[in-house]
Image (cartoon, rainbow, N blue to C red):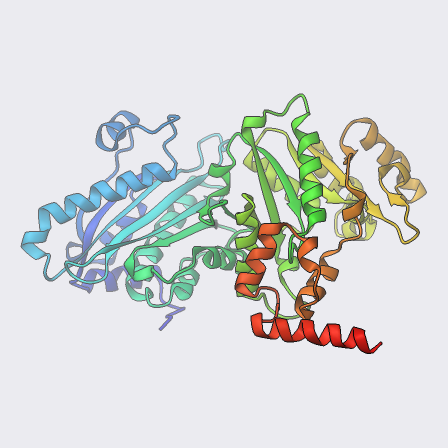
Length: 486
């Protein structure tokens, strides 16, 4: 049962008094703040086998080895710390108290705010632990970004979330959703952000980490989460470090041939840019919380996973974000990489960007948003749309209020916006809503409007409301019969 009002000191004391729980702490980069809570709570000898802080890089390398690229605040460093410390606990204590104890190793590797307040504060935190004596081990790993503007406050927040993690793993493990929520007990998102979480081990075999990441965004713990093309969760700043990001946003329910045409031609133009290194380009399909919702209803988690599976099958990374406005999305991407990025948009999306009503809450209005959107190393690639009269709507005949036309021309001339060329006009009539309705009705022909492997996945799993095989055949017969009666 979730004890929402349980304080950090109370959690630490309860763990100290639980004679089953025993292990070690290794904390690098911001003191031993988590271990300190257990010492101050009293009865720490019941929980702590060892605490350490290999703060000096030479000592750290001697204990845990070196990291490729020389970075210390990375997940690979955290995993080395966890595995080494846990193995030591098990090796040295299993004979003495293994039958009565559930061992753990807690670790973090963190860079807190420096004296000049010029660095980015973030860290990796994790727990390797048993739930039964002599049993298998599990892991819960998170990545956090610290938002306090004082070093001492950041250290305090790290200690709190560390205690929350240990407590949650031992007392809320049966409900990973509650465990996740409890990580922010005694904290606010103004103090700390959790932008990645990963559960693993036999006791979490049924946990889908993509859903856990979705909940991070839904609960406001972070504004974006990222999955690899294999469906595994990724930490955005680590996965996209020194990468060119090419991103397409949409509902993608399902992805259609027009999306593939947009991506293919947009990618060719992006790779042709002089300041783009092809070997460093990553393609991301982005789903916003808004696009995941169906009207006023909450997010359908199965539908979300279906979309992710399909996109991953095409080799895409997938991002879910709460950055509804494009300028906020660009600001976020610019925090992840300093290399040039590209956004693939349809002309209706560009039309929406020029709607001033979206920026009424900004003191500088549309100019303030554009200062963020276009001052970064980002370029918009615009896919034309087909007008009702059969003409093509693109940047060449783009409709914009007269007082904003000079601004639009400035962006064109300065190579911030570019039409996608060599598009296939045969695909331009395809819309996601039209294809989705065909799928729901089991209407023949929708398969030709989506990539072949996407159609196969939709049929195999009966996705997006597609009638099951028997119902599908009956529906097709009904359609043919209705047509014959006309």
